[in-house]
Amino acid sequence: MLYLIGIGLGNELDITLRGLEAVKKCNFIYLESYTSKINARKPEFEKLYGREIILADRNMVENKASEIIKRAKVKDVAFLVIGDALSATTHISLLMQAKEESVETEVIHNASILNAVSDTGLSLYKFGKTVSIPFQNNDIETPYVLLKENLSINAHTLFLLDLIPMEDVFMTVNEAIEYLLRTETKKKLNLFSKSTMVVACCGFGSEDSVIKYGKAAEIASEEFTKFPQCLIVPSKLHFMEEDYLKIISKD
Ligand SMILES: C[S@@+](CC[C@H](N)C(=O)[O-])C[C@H]1O[C@@H](n2cnc3c(N)ncnc32)[C@H](O)[C@@H]1O
Image (cartoon, rainbow, N blue to C red; front, side, top):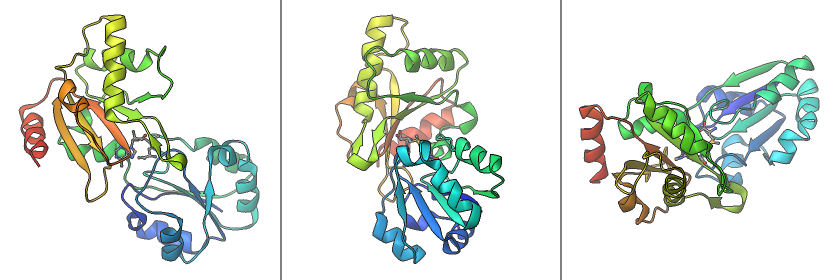
């Protein structure tokens, strides 16, 4: 049996009761640790689960998934994903492999950055396509083009920012703003400027998460030390959305 379990955004305690119950009966527990970061380390998980966990990097999941599947054929295996099991990071290929090999599967969901952005007061119904900004972005225009697409239908844009969690390397909202300003200078479509209002979202799901709403230039001049981070470029705001953003940005 293969369990794909979302463990939430905050720390080891964010797993659901159903997720915890499943983990406790598993013989092998893999923690996918290359697409996001949570405020807990291996020992904290192991203490809660009463089991050893195996940190799974991209290579292990994408190239050696057969080891996970092989084990799931004869034993109970948990594959833990930070945030939600299938949101913003797809592990569908793992599920597909399992199904192809007739391994039973169960998905146990949890909160994701895709719904935690509702902490900002922005309506989830009004978000357009989610956009990722990679580290190597000098010649990349897709995030800017997607911003244009979203703005054209009056939709907010959530930018997910690249990261290498195992090396504690995270793209910052400042770098994301820099990317958008640089691409604006190249493409000149009048989508983004130093006075565009943006929302910095840092370390959502933890007690000391940070939300800051302001002009791109102001946000870019601040230092945010909570990770991971994402950036929202809102479209036209409903007055309730704007009022709420102003209130929480004063904290
Ligand atoms: C590839 S997504 C992984 C999504 C995860 N599976 C989930 O459901 O939340 C990782 C990116 O989402 C954003 N992100 C994830 N967790 C976050 C958090 N707690 N606070 C702010 N941004 C976060 C960051 O931009 C990060 O680089």
